[in-house]
Image 1 (cartoon, rainbow, N blue to C red):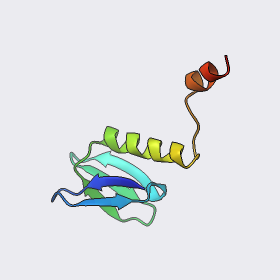
Image 2 (tube, helix red, strand yellow):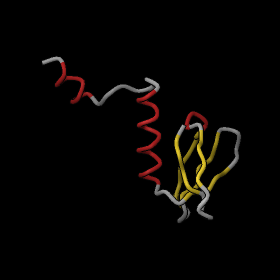
Image 3 (cartoon, rainbow, N blue to C red):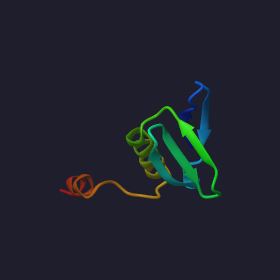
Image 4 (cartoon, helix red, strand yellow):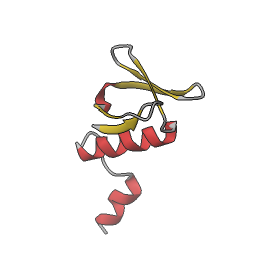
Length: 73
């Protein structure tokens, strides 16, 4: 789950596994797999970073190659 802020300032959590697309129109708009769209205050870059961190927490993606390689030396 990631924590985001709606344009009206209300904070909510979203299951990042349901995110299909993140765009700026210029407000950041998240499209979910069910077609629902959510507009948030966070930038596209911030949303991507939050999603990446969430995926790493649940082991959907690993560490970047340069980090993985430095641990084994």
